[in-house]
Amino acid sequence: MKLREIQRRVASEMHMNVNMIRYRKAKKMVKDKLAGNFVDGFAMLWDYANELILKNPGSTIKMTVNRITPESPHFNRFYVCFEVLKRGWKKGCKPILGLDGCFLKGPLMSEMLFAFLSLLTTDL
View 1 (cartoon, rainbow, N blue to C red):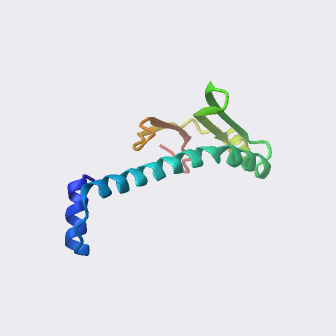
View 2: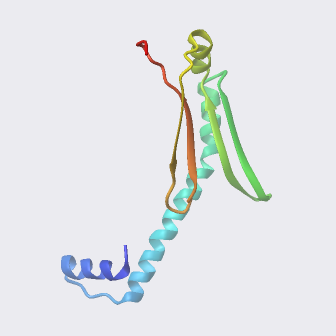
View 3: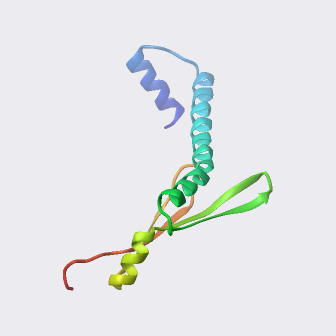
């Protein structure tokens, strides 16, 4: 949202007149907080992976990071295949695979791809 739009809304809804410097600072604080939430969320992926291994023995969980510097790894990919899905695939082997993806907005600006198995109960 543009600063002028924020200024207009505050003036009309709250009947306040605030200078642009304060809007600029407030907008920067919000952006910084959102970026911090992304960093915190990615840091929690290690805990999530460990919890998945504990609760789903036999599952495959792989996470890779790019190490530009040793102290700050950058997330690369996260792969999960649950044991129950492995068994189901081996037992029923329905050859219907799908691929989908989406573009991520915000500070990430990347693409997320999904490969999935469609379990159909009816004949095609």
